[in-house]
Image 1 (cartoon, rainbow over the protein chains, first blue to last red):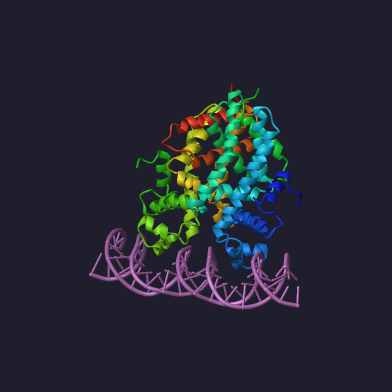
Image 2 (cartoon, rainbow over the protein chains, first blue to last red):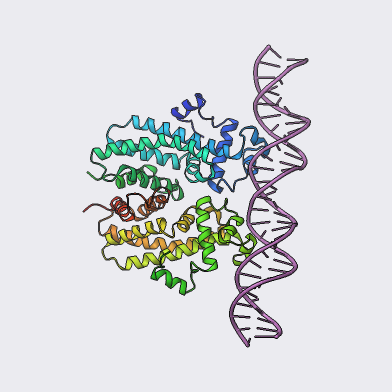
Length: 205
Length: 205
DNA sequence: TTACAAACCAAGCGCTTGCTTGGTAGTCTT
DNA sequence: AAGACTACCAAGCAAGCGCTTGGTTTGTAA
């Protein structure tokens, strides 16, 4: 296991997300993996307990119920990846570069270490009750605003032709779906894939 | 409820899929709707029974178990939409037109009447056991071949620049994701959306 | 060393799940 | 009219579910 990024470390120090080597952190990591592989509903609290080496009942010492674990998985990954995107944007100047940075970031988050949690965020939405959906939706809004701003700038500069909102939604699907087919072991690197996705989004010039 | 298409009617006559007004047909339609809205796992056999107006136990007179219902939903929709795509392809000449026809077809299948079943096909994959996954995968292979052939032709003709396999996968995600945001009531028509998707896939010329 | 809280275990409760069983009403065939 | 078959119901079983409970261990700090 490699070092967490500076951004990641900062969020841990601020107490916003749990350290990966803490009890809660390990639980959330295991939960993300299981929820991705089997789905939230098919994953039992006994599965979760076994994955972290405790009794199923002991989980409820850390979280009030199973759904709270799902919510925590989603919450931590959206907070982390929002910050990672802000950091990546800060290093780009041109609108086109910003879009590429966002694409790279999102592919990394989906295909890299937080991939399990990101997949859960995207596909296990319905398993949260209304109240928790609203909470996550609010956090997602901040994340999506970064995208809309960058795409709107790109459109103003002429690199993008179609409506930013529609483009973002098409990209959301295209990028999140990669989790179902992309393999690290293959010939295609994430950066190459990001370039391909960029070539769809913006006009050649 | 409007008339089924000629292709649809043909498959019913051949006994390949169930008529929408038959007992099994109504069960599969209700199952598709429930599976889409609540997910397969969260949908109980009691929900299914109530939706078609019979006791939950009576379902097992038509299908041996709950998973067989999910499999039938997936099987019928992939068979139908494969035939619909073949019919649409037959009416197109230019590679570019063929790609547009496929995009329109897939959007129709995802956003139109078979939308619930298509969504289930895409998102409830994991709920099938290995054996049934293989069965559906085989049927999906025929469907995907139509896409790969059309995109390969389009690349040969110079309208497409990136690898057909990668392009297809990016399009799969972009198009299937529309189910999560597209609304019939809005200003954007499905044909307009298809044009936008086409503009991402192929070079302007 | 003692005091106390956090982290955990062993057991199991109440409920829901997919599915089975034995039987019945209606329809079709001969 | 008799027999067979299809489509269903009413009742309930065994297993698995999320979660609770009462008590024990472990880490920390005075």
